Image (cartoon, rainbow, N blue to C red; front, side, top):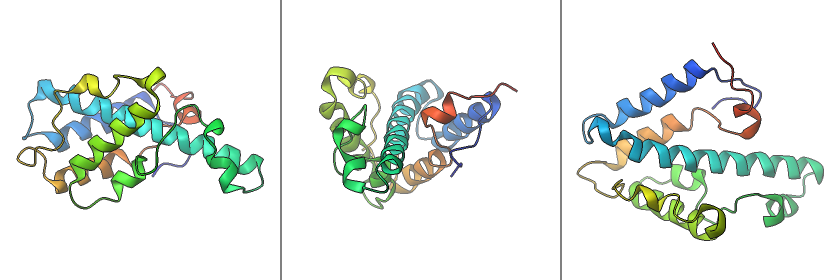
Length: 159
């Protein structure tokens, strides 16, 4: 995984997203990529930003994990079991876990994220004929290679 001090160039970001599309190549058509990559990208970014806020609060509180997890420390709430790492650790029914996590985040943040993930309702993460658990695990592992924290994305470098 990238270090939080890493910079990501526009070209690296493009290549990383292109490779995510390559992982999905076959079970879905090229014109469907956006219906899968976009919500996954939002989900990853939400989790990475939550982690960044947690780390900041942890530092400010001299390591108080309870304080760092307080909802007031986070712009977006991530319910228990809905963090990127929760889905990443799944080995079975990965698509179902992904849908449940994104729906959980949307419900917990109805005022700000209402409809965000459900607007991509043409994405069928739970269809194991299209996405085996192994393929989804490969996609999630690939997406885990980069951090999408505000501190990194704000410094997105141009080639």
